[in-house]
Length: 259
Figure 1 (tube, helix red, strand yellow):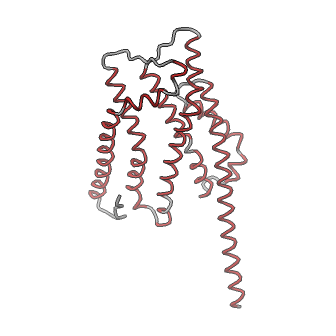
Figure 2 (cartoon, rainbow, N blue to C red; figure 1 turned 60 degrees about the vertical axis):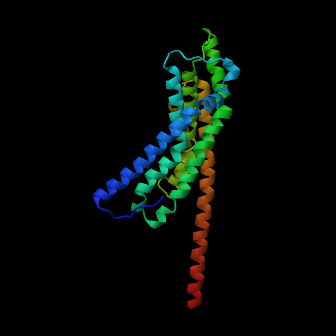
Figure 3 (spheres, rainbow, N blue to C red; figure 1 turned 90 degrees about the vertical axis):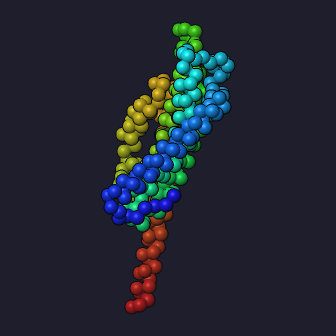
């Protein structure tokens, strides 16, 4: 996708913005239509980890429920699939304003953010959804006969997966904050108690089902991601400072030779 020049008249900037918004909207509409007709396959995939706890029977409670459920699933799936393209279009619009040494971080950032997001969703699908729905359906069965409404169950599952996808961006955020010295690495390490409390609050807010099981699993994942991010950040900082120190020593040796 071409990048516009850094300096353009206002109307050209608005034209560039309109062009990128058009790309996003058209791609999202086309993908939504495709996923609408493929919604039965998506539904089978999404209900597979839930079926052991509710059985094979799912219900829709209204005449328009079939259309709205298929369209909602199609749109949410399209939004997830198109998210890398949407992020790139947003960054590409602002890219001309960045310095050359700043632009080199954009593509790796988009790739890393996309990978972490989808890894988070996959992790949630295999390791979080089964125990979460086992607990939720058990709570329902304790007081009533569960009636598995398709839109409700799949909606909750997709929000849970998106929540974990967003949560998996934490290492990238911590890495950039520390590497660019916005927040020193020592501050991250010294304030671990406060950060753990903040992560617990985030885990409670980002889980859509408000169950303690899901919240505790999210909290454990966030702590693990945070510690992994700090380990990688420390390695990157040490490696960069080591290269900087080696470069300074080389310059010093050349200076001594000249003398």
